Length: 108
Image 1: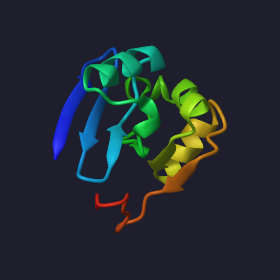
Image 2: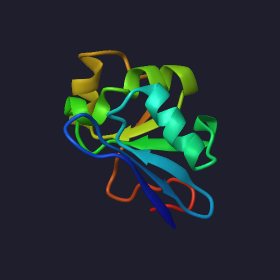
Image 3: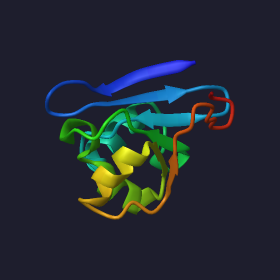
Image 4: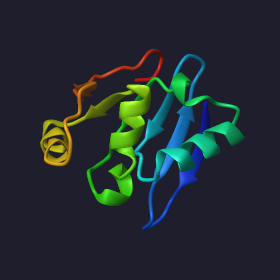
């Protein structure tokens, strides 16, 4: 497993996690351009990201979500409450509600 913190702090948070089969982002609190550059430093294309998992909907965890998901159509995993909060800002189209036993490829 590979874990890289792309941003951490009050200005924005995002981490990259990679397993043998899966590439995800946890939170997306920075601009799409910032995330693209950080992923490029890891030799990862944004198109390779399988999913974005949200921890909560504070702006420093979701501020880049709208543009990134519009550009790459990456599936977002979140709770019902988070979906309601996000949909007050923009309509999230590609998502899945997190269940107790959700799985993304080989990541459980």
